[in-house]
Image (cartoon, rainbow, N blue to C red; front, side, top):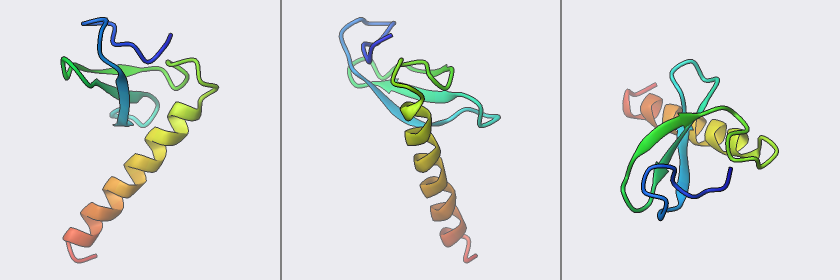
Length: 70
């Protein structure tokens, strides 16, 4: 699979985070803004997209902890 959106077939997919159980990645299309989950190597990038999603999720969680005063 490439980073082309499977819904509109025009936009580029961007990794935005991890799925609910932290075992999938969530991607979003730059054109149609469709968001969906893929397996950790769902973009055929040697699981580097999973690493990217994990880092984004860590940043999001650290930001949430900072906002809560923790």
